[in-house]
Length: 254
Image 1: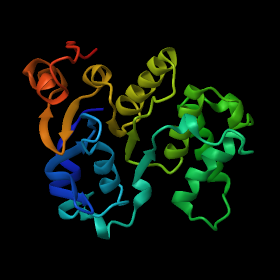
Image 2 (image 1 turned 60 degrees about the horizontal axis):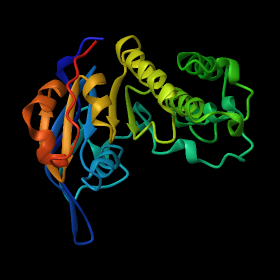
Image 3 (image 1 turned 30 degrees about the horizontal axis):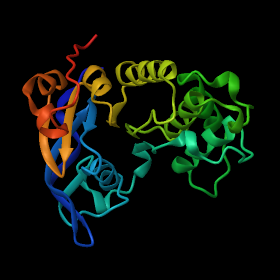
Image 4 (image 1 turned 90 degrees about the vertical axis):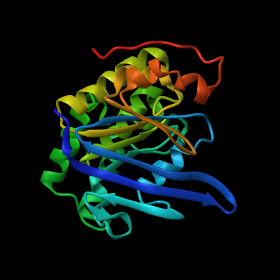
C-alpha cells in the first residue's frame, strides 16, 4: 500500500491533557496519513497510552483539537472505523467460556449494533477476519486454551471484524514470546501492505518500531520527534529521551 500524504485520517493539533493537576501531554501535534504505519515510542509515563485514548475518543483533551477523517473527534460517530487492540490481552480472564469465533463476533457488533442479529454476511466477515490472522482453524477453540501469540491474533481479528480503516495497537506483544512476536509483526506488515490498513502502534520496544514502521513519533509529554524511524535512531535523540544507557541499534527497512 502506498502512503497518501495528501489524505489525513487523524490530525492532532496542539493537544494537551492533564489528570487533575498532573500534566501528561503538552501541545502535541502530528498527522496520520492513509497508509501510514506509525510507531509511537517514548519512556514510561510519557503519555503514549493517553494519546491513544484521546484518538479513540475515550478521553477529551484539556486543550487542542483532534480531527478524525476530517471531523472533530467529539462529533465523529463512526467509531468502528478505528479498530483497537488494548494492552495485555494475554492477561485477560482465561476461564471466560468463549470460543475464538465468539470473541471475533463481538467485533462485528461494533458495526451492526449490539442488539442486532448477525446475518450471513456478518459471519462471512468474521470468517475472513479469522483467515486474515491465520486463526480460522481455531474458530471453535476456547480462548483459555490459546497461547499468548494466538490470543493476540484473535483480538486483532476481533478488531478487523468491524472493518476498520485504522488499526490501533497498544503494547501488543506484552506476554508474547519472542518467536510469536516475530510472527506477529509479520502479520502487521501484511495488514499494512496488502490489506490497506493504516496502523498506529504504541510500543516500548524502540528496536522493533524502528525496524517495522514507516513513521515514528516520540512522545515524552511533548512531541520530541516525528519522522523517519531510521533518522530518529541516528539523530542522537534516543539518548536524550531514554537516557545515556539505552542500547543504540540501527535498523533499515526490508
